[in-house]
Amino acid sequence: MNRSLSSFVFLSSLLATCGTAATCVTGPAADLQRTTNPAARTKGPIFRTQVDLLIARMAKATETPGVAAPYSNSIRDAAQLLSAMGHCHRFYVALDNPRIRATLGLLIGGRRDDGSFGVGKDEDPATTAWVVDALTAMDRDRYGDEIEMAKRWLADRGLATSMWSHQVEVVATKVRSDVFPEHLATEALAFVATVPTSLQGALDRTAALAALLQLVACQEANRDLDVAQDPGAQATTAAFSPAQQKAFDFLMAQQKDGTMLVKYGDTSFADPAITGFAMLALQTKPLALRSQQESAVLEQGLRWLLANQNEDGSFGQQVQNYTTSVVIGALARWADPSAKTPLDKAQRFILACQNVESSGYQSSDRDYGSIGYGGSQRGDLSNVNFALQALRESGLPAEHEAFRKALVFLQRSQNLKSVNDFSGKVTDPDAGGKLIDIVPGEDGGSAYYPGNSAAGYDETPDGKSKPRSYGSMTYALLKAYTLCGVSKDDPRVQAAVNWIAQHWTLDENPGFVVPAGDKARYAGLFYYYMVLAQSLDMASVDTVTKVVEADAKDAPKPVPIDWRKALREHLQGLQQQDGSFVNAKNPRWMESMQVLCTCYAMLALERCR
Image 1 (cartoon, rainbow, N blue to C red):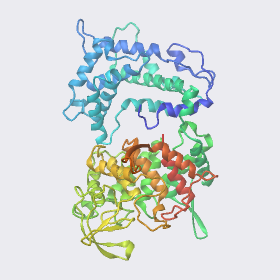
Image 2 (cartoon, rainbow, N blue to C red; image 1 turned 180 degrees about the horizontal axis):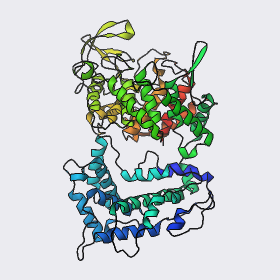
Image 3 (cartoon, rainbow, N blue to C red; image 1 turned 45 degrees about the vertical axis):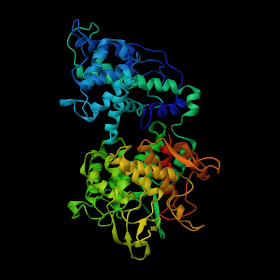
Image 4 (tube, helix red, strand yellow; image 1 turned 180 degrees about the vertical axis):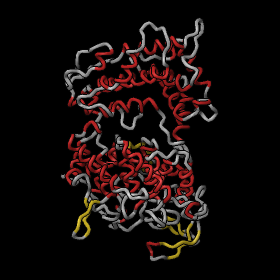
């Protein structure tokens, strides 16, 4: 299961606080009760009687004598029912009965030419994701092509490819040392208690389906806990590693009342950008693993951020897009309804920062589609990737025009002539405004913004300049393309991934051509680690295939690299005794700050599952 935080991983580390299994108590009334031993958990299948009853009643309600009719005429309802049946304690499959096969036929009949599913009121992305779940559970082998095409359709739009995983995730995130899946189906059990066991009479199918999904999600979450109690499983799976905990402890020691202080001369003040980063990094620790004191600190910090939002929806007084994007990331992870309105306001602020027609820009302008630090400042790929992530995390639909317009800027930043139409004479701000004649390169990597690269330029035979691609911005490009819904198979993404493979390294920020001993290649190293992990994880790239040069007798050979394992081990080797991280090789871009580098490292480690 591809969950952002799988219930297996999330729950396994919780078991150190769990005792032995309680005696199974049956019946709706008993199911509503908490066990008298809060450290006890019922092992094995839970809610079997209730799940069997609901499936039987829903089947009976749509039964046609002598005909193997689908369980529902609604594609979405049918997909949800099959998903629940496939994941419940009986693990139904297509071969089990003709009604399942008839229902699968209904789903396939609702397939559109683009690979999505649904007609009429069912025509929405969630329906397609539910159908993927149903086909996968019931007959993955037979419907493999349909599953993969539907997943690509969803992924191209930046949408989740599984609704079932989300259903279980909701349960998993509520588990505590004294609250288990058996305690998390109160409403569903109350409904089942009203359903006659005789299979006769009217049935509220909508309520029955909702109850069934809740009960089966609890069943699966409980199975995950069962698996996690296997010592071997615990040894290979860690929801929060010792290195992450050490970094967490370091950040906790730096905060004051939930905020992070920044020194300016002889004074110190609470800074919303660094506090936002800290709140974002600290929330990488699963909720169930946090102590009461840790949770209280996070609550303080997040509420401090809310209280300091500006009237226009932004946060901070300088570099406001950057700060607001970071704070959105922190607030979006917080399951508190009070964050909804501030997030909406912050989203509107970021949209207003985009350089588009409403700000007087035309599509031919170099800065079109970009977002900068705020105000009228020139856009850049670093700010753009932060902003696009914030827009998605704050709930902006993938189809919004902001993402389409951002693609214009992304293409002009990429060294790929087939999509980059930017050329001409511009100034180089890093060379005192020197005028240079720009043309795009062809290596597939990315510069900082169209015509500008912190890694410098390569000269062409006719005297023009090509901005050099470098690591952190190529990863930022890949991340931004993914956030805009560009698929993994798109030539733009493939070109960026190829550049990454050719320049794979964790020792430096690659792409800088500098003399020996020069520190430029180490600039932004921890930012590089963060965006590397985010981009490869978001783009579903599990291995980076690096071509390794052999000796004179052998041809170069491709070597697949498990980047998550490589990055995790590399960062663990860089961690200081106190749990912090710092860029000791180049302090540029604020990486002399232990707090900032530690936040970057924690956000990278989160993706190294």
